[in-house]
Length: 525
Image 1 (cartoon, helix red, strand yellow):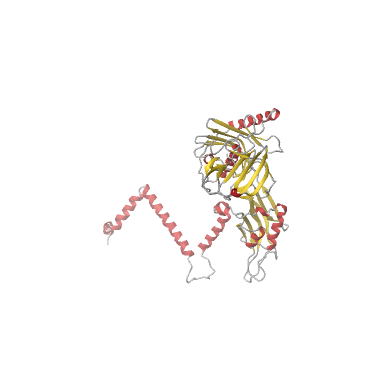
Image 2 (cartoon, helix red, strand yellow):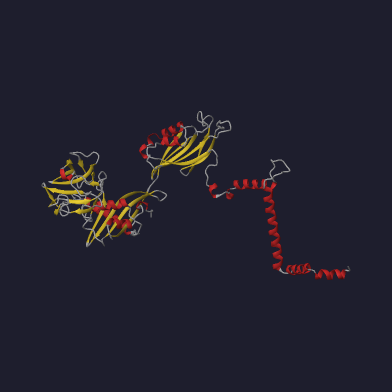
C-alpha cells in the first residue's frame, strides 16, 4: 500500500480520532495536568500492590522459609525507627513511665476485713516483701486508715518462666517507675530473689512500690530502696483556705435554700447550730426570709475540696428582724464563740432545739392522747425524727437520771443548775461513756432518738423543767450568754470590722445547684 493510501486508511480508523483528541488535550494546561496526575496515581497504586504481594505468605517459596521479602523487611525497619522517635510514637506510648516487659502495675481496692499485707499477698507479692513493706511504715502506719473501698496502686516485677519451669533471674538491673507522679529508679531483679513457688511453676511478684491516700490531704508511698528493703514516705498536701460569701432566699426551707445556693452541707448544719439559741427554725423561718454566710473551705493544690474551715459571719433576715453573728475567740486556749454586733454572746443557757432539722409533731399544752384515748396535758414538745438521730444536750450540766421510765421509754434528765433541767424521752440508746452523774457540755451528743415507751411512731419528747415543773420550751425566756465589755469588747469590734471589710471585697455567691449533688464538691474560687 502506498504511503498516501496508508495515511487515508489510518485517518479513517477510530484510533486516529482518539490520538487527535489526545494531542488537542495536551495543547491545554488542564489537559497536561490531568495526564500527569493520572500517571502519578497509577504509579502509587502499582507500588502499593507490589508491597501487598511481597508481604503475602508463599505456598511454594523458591527460597528458604526464613527469607523475609525485601518490602516487608523494609516495613519492619521503618516501624522500629518510628517507635524510637518521640514525635512518631503514639500518645499513650509517650506517657508510659516503664517499658520493661516484666514490670506491671495494678490498683487493688480493699474490702471489709482486708489488711495491707493481706492485700499484697492476694495479688501474688511474696510474703517477705509484703511484711517488709508494712514494717517500713513504722509508727506512720495506722491500720484504722485502711477502710473498705480504699484504692492501693501497686507496681511489681514478675519473674519469667523458661521452658524448663525455672525462673529467669538475670543480673540485677534497675527500672524507672512512676510513683505518685514522680519518676523513681528501683531495682528490678536479683539472683534467687524472685522465682517460682516451691512445687509450682507460678512466679512470685517482687514489690517495687505502692501508694495509697488514706485521706484527701495525705498520701503514703512505699518504694524499694537500691540498698535493699523498703522506705516509706508520708506526704501531706498543703491545703489552702478559700473564703466564700454565699446567700439566698428561703423558698421551702432554710436547708434546701442553702443547698440551692451551693453551700456545703456541713456549713449549713453549723449555721443552724449558730442560730439555734435565738431562732426557732420551725416557727420563725418563713418563705421570703433571707440569709447570708461567710465561711472558709480548704482545697488541695489541685483545687480539689478537702475540708470545711469555719463560719466567720452569718446573717438571717426573718421578717423585719435581722440577726447577725460574728466568729470570735477570746482566749486561744478556749473554744471560739459567736457574738452579735454589740458583743453579746449568741449562746443562751439552753438550746431551743436539741436535734438538727427536726419537725415539731406535737406542741406543749392540752391535747387528745393518740394512744391512751383521752385528753391530757402534754408537758413537752415532740420532734419527729428518724430512729438513730443524734440528740444534743440543750445546755451544759450533769446527768441526773438515765434509764427506763414507764411511758417515756429510755429516758435522760440533765440538771443545768439554777433550778433548771431538761428531759428527753423515747430514746433508742445512749451514747458511749454516758452514765448517771456524767458531765455533758452544751451541744454534746449524749443519746439517739428512738421509739421506746408509749408512742405512735419515732420521735423525741423534749421538756424544760423549772423548779420541778414543766414549762413550754418554745416560749420560755432563757438567760442569754455574757456580753463583752472593756478591752475585750474593743478587741472584738476590731475583729468585726476586719470581717466586714473582707466581705465587702467579695461578691455574693448565689448559684443554683442540683440538690441531689454532693455539695462538698464545690470548686475553689
